[in-house]
Length: 260
Image (cartoon, rainbow, N blue to C red):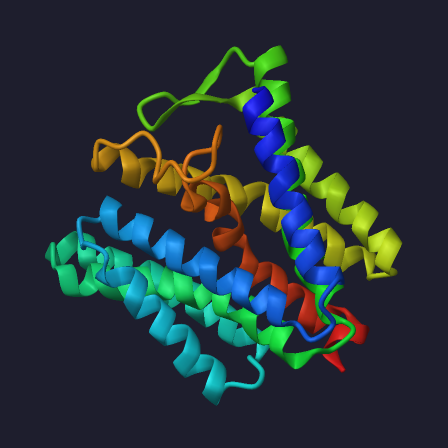
């Protein structure tokens, strides 16, 4: 547990430093590319696609970032729908081609918006990124402590043996509470923050279970071992990747300061 906490503190420090110490946005962009490259490599291993997935996703980042100065908020919802459809096709057809497409959309499609937001150099981009991410982190932390203290009823023992319904409830409540606190800090509309909290509390845990299911199918415990006490990068961002498109859509559509 101590190793896990220390790693989490270091990761948080890196993210905060990238957001606040580099006004050009390049630190965040480089960080997002590194995260995308590593998680794509790990997903390629899980899906038995090899390391080519990582290179393809990195190329996708540069191609899209050069052609799309902004992304319409509804496009993030479309990205999510396409990603789910591609995975369904890959499962049905058992084709590496569809697996490859799913990997590119799931990782590139959900992380590229963060890259583009940082590239805009807008003063409003860092609260948006933090608001999309912090509820997820709070939910994950609450799930661990609540699950250890009160967890009795297994949530999905065949997929993730340690997860409990009590921990899931703690995760959900922490996501909603964190979203509401962030809304008060940044003066965001109450309805937007309530929807964002619900999105993080529900889809975040669904994304975590989905990645656990993929690992279980591949007979893997963690996506990697680069993060002591946590496993791989994909293990840490699976919830954020599931929620980011909807969270960013909610924020851009409902928060005036971001919509302008």
